[in-house]
Image 1 (cartoon, one colour):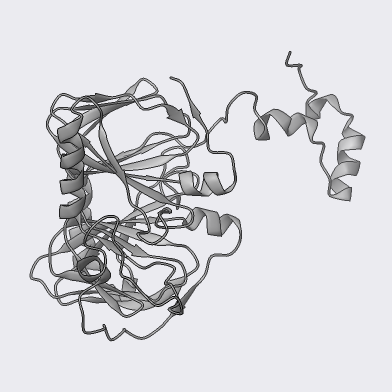
Image 2: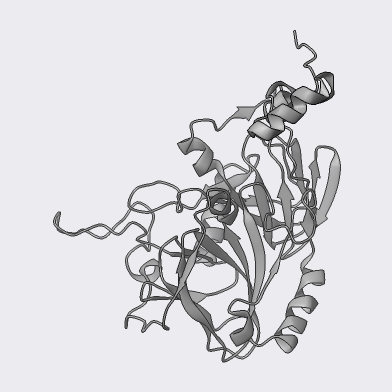
Length: 345
């Protein structure tokens, strides 16, 4: 049975003054804040960011601030529980929406946090990662892992916009977040690995055992192949929600050390009631419309919208029309820490 713990005010004023002078504090008044019973008590609140609201603001940013003055022209999607300006959409995931205009380049840099991009709009944009030029087409997932040099360019005629997802809050908390600047890279004269080496699931290039394996062999996951895989799965089990995880094709592990990415397809009118889980999540709508009940609070969503979900939230998704979403989550981090958990609804 839970007992009522003493408060700071229960202690004599002189004792509190002496503790303050000694640079210490009593644990017991704070115990239930840091170790609540039964389940976490998250600061994170459900958030929803409508693309129709964000797009004009991004385009205006393009008029107001040249990319040379911004380095990365991004609007941060802040967790409502932490307030506007918070560099977190959940406790461990940062989300931003980035704009690149025709002819622009975003300078090369590398940083300790890992990042991934979900392309929202436009064509002709590209990212160069460690010398590999990665086209950016709508729905694609493009990785820029921690420590890898990357820069962006735009050879098209219309704005390119993408969603950035980083494990930045984790590195800020560890006081390990920093970046280095560099020169634009000269791309290798060949298509990226997704078009050459990893065209079919279950197949990888045969190499000499002496060849050093790349830690991130595939850094672009084209959306058209993801959607095709989801449709194939849905065809054989129309009752289940089709889901696929983005994985390293050489190891089968998640594509980044602390962030995972899962694509899902909902048929028209289909519902999904996933188990409650210990990982927080960001959902980005690639196509379609519907709604999600998050602990009883309903969030409506449409194409290119984004919404967030706290830990252990009770979810019910429902599609008004055929819908495709990508879920960004911190399950890989939690599994490494050996505490990922799922609970019945």
